[in-house]
Image (cartoon, rainbow, N blue to C red):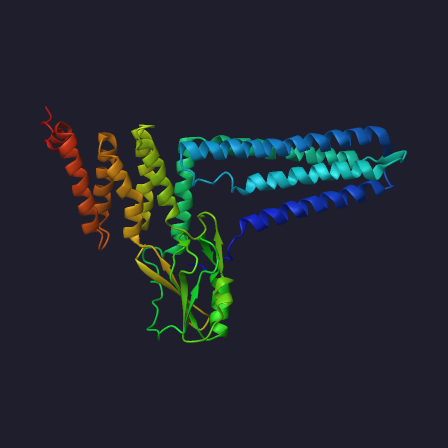
Length: 404
């Protein structure tokens, strides 16, 4: 787990971006009309242009929220309600902030001009340039919205985000092994979650390292990113030194739903959800489940060598372990990504054959300690094929006829 990357608080960041955009718009709207040098033009046409652009861009903000509503509803009903890629995309909120800034600039400038007889041509020129800049942003937003309601782009996005998280949290093949925690004395204190139930989204490792080093303590977290923190449940143990509970809680970012930032299980969960919905009797779309399994196989193959079960120990600058964070292992990924899909696919030969191919390929990679896990699931799938689709299973096991 890379402690050089601070946790991201999306709601706060989006709000600050929009506030900053509005303040910039107000500042420019007040400052530019006061320019009294260079080419000048009559006031009334400028006011008309500014009011038209400003009020028109308020409609653009309505368009953005309309897209959000439609895309979020479509993704929730078609794929999974846990899919929030479009809603959380920086492009959405940056476009919204830019539209607000341009609208506020135009309206503020129109009011600032007041009863003046002439105004600098810089005012309408900048307004038009800002409007032209807004057009490609709206185009990109619409293209992103279209991609967010199509199967292949959604599966590719989820798989790519999963690869990024796995690469960030687990050492690469042949890389240095993660530090192991030394034997610790019994915990001095246990920190419990004092708030209503929430999802552990991120751990601010850099902050926890600082407070643990200052107190000469070791913080051992009990929950993995993506877990639900229940009120009163144990969150972390403090060993060696004394540390206030508030110091540990300040390093925890929790919210109402899971995010990709430090949650390696989320991509497996989303892909499995999409496959399960496709296999439901109401949808009955096994081809979609097969496409979702392509992404699951990619992530399982990518994590086969690096994802080892057990906690990750983070050291300070002197090499002393200060923070221990539990992370899921490869068996957890296998269970989350496959087991429910196998159970739901017992009436779909197409999906069972795809899962069998996936398991055989993973076996061929020879992951240490994974053969038994894969063998049990392969036996499960083959029993399903033999029991429900015996003719197909016999044909799959027949030797191909000799070529002429």
